[in-house]
Image (cartoon, rainbow, N blue to C red; front, side, top):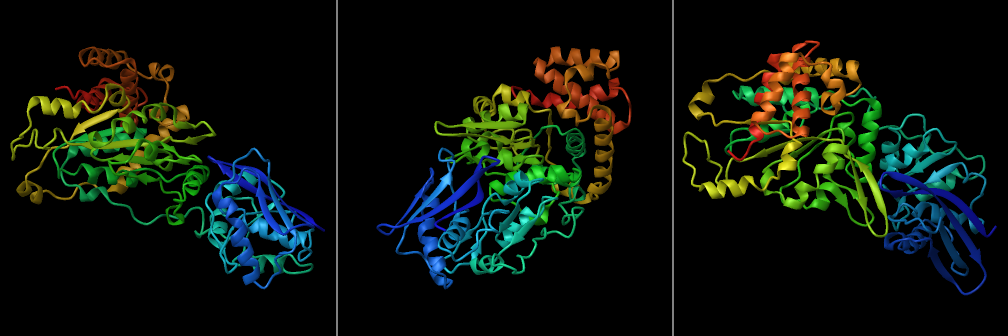
Length: 502
């Protein structure tokens, strides 16, 4: 037989699209041609496959004209994931392997020059698209363990090309089944940073609890060293674990971005990029398109420290994903869409020197410098932030006298109870609740209070809706069915700090 056909998949964004790997041997001048819109990494498979076959003691058909077609021809292919199916196709087309066992598998794996198999990017996304299908999946060990997180799919692992060759022989034992790198889907991750480490700061702690309960975006403002970053890093300890479906959804993005950590299974992602990050690093892009930080934080937290220091273009690129929960990356040659439903937590100093409002050290900035610094954050971006609170400086002597604050565990219980009330009532957390559902839940006095605050503080229609959602979360934490004036008043207090012109 001079033709062998195997099956694999190409990654396009989060999609793993089917690819037929067709290997044909013919008489003629010896050559090795690879076609099918393959990038440089794929074309380099010719040398890796040649070396892997000869190093493993297998025969490479040096005397034949080799043509490898990756179909469909108009689908871009990238990466080294096609090394394994190309090598097996060569062996089958040259009669060294039977063809019968190839059809029921999909194959992906990078070959080293010795023939051992190396992990590939996007194994979990590949597995998710095979879920419920008839074919099984063969991958290198690390990638196979990642793919085994997808339930209802047969995943087998192979450490070396010779292991695959041996398993494909007639009446040979199959390749071993892969197992997920966690003991069970109820695995509890390692302990997170605890809120008990934060002393004092009653209002910022309360803001953190409200943000966790409703999935709200949050901004901390205060001098250096007051605990803004410390507070933000403790938000994951207040959030509930991801469900199985949510964990698979978040892990698929991280797998495509080569960032999946099996030890953090079901833990909400926490991403904290440096303030020098570009808009492409934050939102995603490149060729082929890769997920950015906002997608890697999907269903988790994106923490932007030193918020005004980020490039203006990078911050403005966050506006649409904050509303839609998705980011569409369009390029001339191709486009991709990634999920980006993240919770934004940011921190900033009140002025360039950071000492504005510090009772212990005078600010050296002029009013114009302060205004220019705060003006780096546009009004539309601030409008998409729900809570803004000041983190004041506590003198060291007073701080040492204060006991540790409430631990994360009891706060997380209150957060979970509030989230459960919201989901039972409306099917989503309050940050994604629409206005029509909110209107029926407000007491007339609470609505009037919020309307007066909106007029006095010049809130936009979007800002007013976010204040309504914030008040609903405060009421859920209090266990009340309707939003009363106390909840509305706290929502105004937690949101009014967004007026940075003062």
